[in-house]
Length: 344
Length: 237
Image 1 (cartoon, one colour):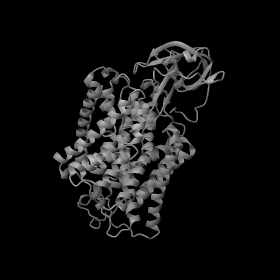
Image 2 (cartoon, one colour):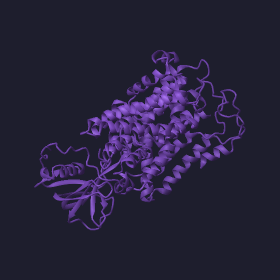
Image 3 (cartoon, helix red, strand yellow):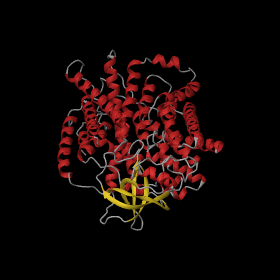
Image 4 (cartoon, helix red, strand yellow):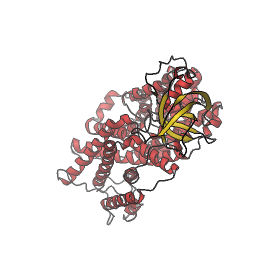
C-alpha cells in the first residue's frame, strides 16, 4: 500500500507522541511527502477506472464494497455535525462554563451529563468527537463518558424512530430510554470508582498561545474529521466484512433460547455497527426473538459496536477503549435483561 | 505538512460526496431523503479544507513548523479508501445476493388495523411492501378481484421458482432488509437473478415461510411480466 511507503522512509525519532509537544518535535530528515503519495494514488484511480470499467466483481465482493461505502457515506454527515459541535466547544466555550453548569461532585455530574445526551440529535458517530472535546475542556471523564453513551440512544430522533419501528409496543421506547440512560450512568459511576487516569489518554492538542478563534476552530474540525473519519473507515471495513461473512441462518438456531438469544442479538448489534437511527427497524425485523433480546440489541448497539470502538480508540486511546467497551457491553446486557424482566 | 495533507484529504472526501449527491448515485448507498444532509456535509468539508489551504498558502497564518509525523501511522490515510472505492468502481446497489441472506420484513403492519381500500386504477400500482402487508394482514381480502402491478428484482427460490423482492433501507445499505413475494403463473424464459421486472397479476392465496426468519412470504398469480431497467431509487424506504 502506498501509505506504507510514506512511513518506512521516515527517519524514526525516539520521541513518543505523548512527549512531542509542539515545537519540540524533530523534523524527519527525508520522507516521501504526502502530496507525492496522493498524486500517485489519484493516478492509480484513473488507471484503475479504465482497467476495471467492464469488470464485475463476484457478488459477495460487490455487496461488501457497497456496504462499506454506504456506512462511510451515511456516517460522514454525523461526524461533520459532531465535529462542528466539538470545534465550537473548543474554540468558543471557556472551560469555566462546564464547571459552572455541572455539579461539582462528579457522582452528581454523571447523571446530569447522561440526561444531557437528549440534546444531541444524531447517531453515535457524532457523539465521539463531542465527548472528546468535553474532556479537553475539563469536564470530568466519567461525566463525558456518560454523555458519550447516552446521547446516541436517548435523543428524540432515535426515540421517534423506535416508536415508528415498534408501533404496537409503546413500552419499547420507554424501555430503550430507561435502559440506555441507566447503563450510561452506571458506566460513569463505575469509571469514577474503578477507572484509572493512566488508561485515559485523549489526544491532547495544544494550540499555540494566542491563536485566533478561527484557527482553533479550523484546527479542531480538521483533526476531528480526519481522525474520527479514519477510525470510522477502519470500523466500516470490519462491519462490512462481518455483514457479508456471517452466515444468514445462525440467528434462527438460538432464537428460542432465553439466554443465548439475548447474547446473540447483543453480539449482532456489536457486529453490524448500525446507525442508532436505523437499528430499531432491524430489531423489528427479528420477530422470532423475545422483546428482551431485541431491547438488548437496541441498548448495546449505540454504545458498543465495531466502528464505535475503533473511533473510541482514536479519541481516548487504546488502553481506555479496550477496557471500556467490554465493561459497557456487560452492563448494557445486564440492564436490558433486568428492564425486560420488569416490563415483559 | 500534516495540516495541508489533511486539508487535501477533506477536499477529496467532500468532492466525492458532492459528486455522488449531484449525480444521484448516492441512492445506491443511503436513503434518498439524505441528499440535503449530504450536500451540507460536503459543503462543510470543502469549506474547512478550502479555508485551511487558503490560510496556509495565502500567508495569513504561520506555517505549522512542528511536524506531527512521529513516524506513527496517520489514520487520515484510511479516508482515501472510500474515496478511491467510489472513484474506481462505484459499487452498484445491493440486490438478490443480500436479499437471499436476510429474512423478509412485512414493515410495521398492525394486525388489528383496518386497511383502507385499494386506490383506483386498473391495474392498481402497489409497492411490494404494500402488497405483502395486505396479503398477510387480512389474508388478502382488500386485494381480491383486482388487477395489481408492482416491480422489483428477481431472487431465485429454492426449487427453481422465483421471488420478486425489494430492499427496504432506513439509513444506509448496511441496514437493508428485503421484502419478498413469491411468483406463480407464467413467467418469461431466460430470467436471471437481480433482473428487474414489472409484473401484473392477481392475489394468490398461497404463502410460504421464509427459511431465514420464518416470516410469511405471500404469493402473486402472475399474468404478465416485463423486464424494466433498474429504477432511479433502487431501495424502498
